[in-house]
Length: 115
Image (tube, rainbow, N blue to C red; front, side, top):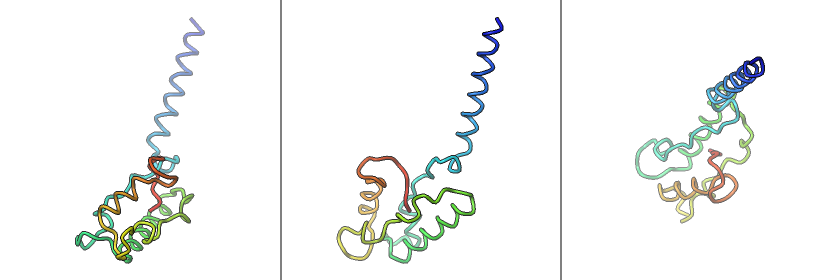
């Protein structure tokens, strides 16, 4: 009976720690959600300009810093040329989605965002 009580107490403690870690969100190492195309395309013209990309990246880094977020990928932010596959110096929604599918370590490798 005493062993069952100790086991139940241990399981309850593990559950509480797990729920706390889940609720902590990005500060616990979980990546933030990936941004949507519309988060970048602030003028709604259907393209992300170099200025819109830079403004979004700066804003995102500031928000992470203010919230105590991890900056482990700060040096790996994509350049416009990494995403702009047709060389028009703009990012279309198709190029954006294609880039997001790549992930930081190649196709289908996780959902961390370097934006």
